[in-house]
Amino acid sequence: MPEFDYKKELAKVPHEPGVYRYFDATGEVIYVGKAKDLRNRVSSYFTNSKGHDRKTLRLVSQIRKIEFTIVHTEFDALLLENQLIKRYQPKFNILLRDDKTYPFVCVTNEHFPRVITTRRIDRKLGTFYGPFANLKPMYTVLDMFSQLFTIRTCNYNLAPENIEAGKYKVCLEYHIGNCKGPCEGRQAEADYNKDIEQVHHILKGNLKPAQDHFRNRMVEAANDLAFEQAQQYKDKMDVLQRFQSKSTVVNPKIADADVFSIASDETAAYINFMKVINGTIVQAHTVEVKKKLDEADADLLAMLIIEFREQYGSQSKEIISNIPLDVDLKAEVTIPQIGDKKKLLDMSLKNVLYFRRERQDRAAAEATANASKKDRVLIKLKQDLQLKTLPNRIECFDNSNIQGTNPVSAMVCFIGGKPANKEYRHFSIKTVIGPNDFASMHEVVTRRYTRVLEEQTDMPDLIVIDGGKGQLSAACDALKALGLYGKVPIIGIAKRLEEIYFPEDNLPLYIDKKSESLKLIQRIRDEAHRFAITYHRDKRSRNSLISELENVEGIGKKTAAKLLKHFKGVKKIKEASIDEVAEVVGKDRAVKLKQYFETIEQ
Image 1 (spheres, rainbow, N blue to C red):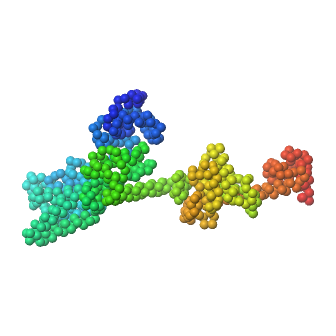
Image 2: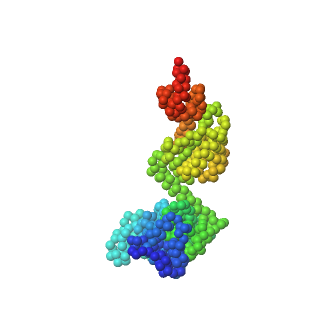
Image 3: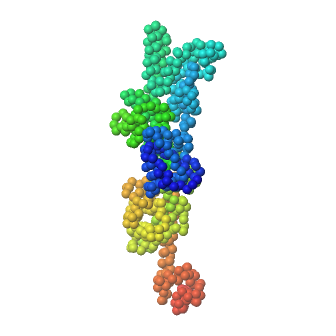
């Protein structure tokens, strides 16, 4: 395929409503879209690249050919777009597949029509009602038909010539009263079709004609003194009444309407549809649509309205929605604010939000089930602390001092739920005099993240402070001074009851003591405490050794520290020769050191 010149292609696109198609280098359709103005819409893909997200930029990079079809109205464009997406299944479009997974009820086009269920749609076969996303209402309707009407269940070809030829004999259904024997000509086709007419009304959600039909027959039978038959018709009316009472009746004053509501997140949209006929909800269906590009809710909902109304054969003149739609859908679109229509919309929204939460919880559960133990713990920790991102890198701070001597702090780092020893850091407190945990915490957090900012190293996904509200508050003040507060999640863990504290929240969070996420926080806290204590002991030991070496004439703190750094301990200094010591501190001091050790050993 020749090199794509989008400016040359755009010159061919008119300022008319229509549908456009993008092709890649292999000639495959990769995107189908609609527009009120084809030229403006198509050019926006190529001239506004800064406003596009990553997925749209990837789409544009693959376009090698543009085709378009002009239509009369935007509604025609919606219909054509729907058909082309189903035909080509472009990889950058949300996929609108013909719904073959849900069953339909079909009233067949034949002599003495049958009422059957099928998942295969062939409009030549008969009139289809559905789809039924929930099977229970469908079987409830079919069971009602068996109580109300005598509809045949055989699949004989009951053409007049076959009946006259006597090809068929009545079966058990006739003898038990479920069929009137049309196969032997015992029921006229016109009489049979009166029942079928009522079946059509009921499947359309209109029960009144069927109720009137049985009421009239009941009155006629009563007038003819056929009271037993009149009672049978009354029983059928009661069946219809019970069925109607089980249906969700909103308000009989509400005319036919289609209710749509949408809720979405970054990756998917969730749409609920409810079909209302004579104030009764006769169909309800909720779907999830995976986003391919950063589609707007209004565009997705308009597309799904066309899809659902086609699937369910809806001709309602009113569409109730929770968002405005700037498109002609051949029906009045309303967003009710009060009244029964608002209650109807709230019901739809409640369903769609529940469906979204259920799907998200299921996805989270599947992700947790498929993850390794390490990932499961981090996912659980993310959920427990309500973090926005997975806490892959966690840094924990702890202070250590005994009776105010040698105050130190330590930071440990866990990456992927495991200790990253090379990332551990010790801090000798420089600006705080005496045992002041709050001030010490403020100092070390400031020093740590000042250096991270200067060196542009990895920032943690979670900061843990070993301590309660006081230490946490001091750490938060340090982050505020650095402009990091609110950008990095931070918590404090109090030792006594293992309470988790959040900034600016007086009430702690109590995580289940058996929870893997709490055990991870405890493990990180205990490792920070161990590391701080070890450093504190080393520092005290080092200070005592320095004090011992200061007993030698001519050796001060700096010289003592220099010796310890070189020989790694007093024992090694004792074992070293005078020449080895002299290389570090000079001949005179080396001799005095040797004399001192000889003196204290005697």
